[in-house]
Length: 299
Image 1 (cartoon, rainbow, N blue to C red):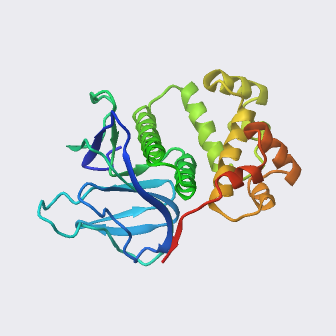
Image 2: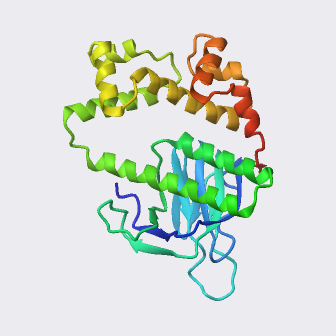
Image 3: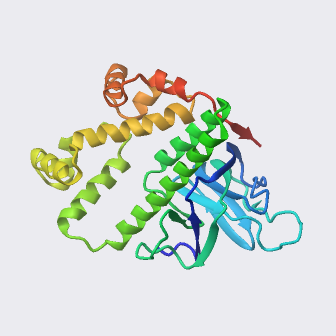
């Protein structure tokens, strides 16, 4: 996956330095924050709509499931206003952002290759890419906001920022690995197809029998096959993905628990509550109250 002509290499024997974070809901023609200082990076993760930006003569976009990392203003060592991205197209968008710095950051030409030798403690990130599990990254961003609002100390916030960037780095690495292994045997391909099918229809009343029928297999055989590869039953995987999606909706939207239950294909509200508690050991309302402090900007 050759998404960019350079990548970032971050040497992190100690955590990244967290600077600030937020969620922006705006028309993307509005100029976003952009790196504010010469050592400051900015991460953006799309949540809704498409953010179109003009940055250093290049046009780039952020949409749901995608991320961007803007570099510091390194082009001019003299004191000057930082080079900042500008809105390129007037469309509504929503995205999470985080500014951070790293004392040992460098660039290398070409996209990240998993065969590239890395220094111990170093992580690699492209300037933009896709996330295998975007809701995981968004949930971490949401939790970071809650920690800021709750007054957590800088040490904790630095490690939280590091966790987010490591999550994105690993998701990108897994994405590269999947694309590199496009030519796989049928056994692995079926497993990947099941994962993609579940992700595509996560909002429906998914059942193992429906999935087995779709792929032309006996449901008991497909369940055994899936568990042999993944270590968890297909039924449990479906449920865990629904709960992960529910966690995102609980923290990122004002939908009622009943609305979330309906949107995820549960037969009724009480079934959703029981399923949620079986995975998280708490109710949806309890989870929502844990991360109740959002940092939202409206332009």
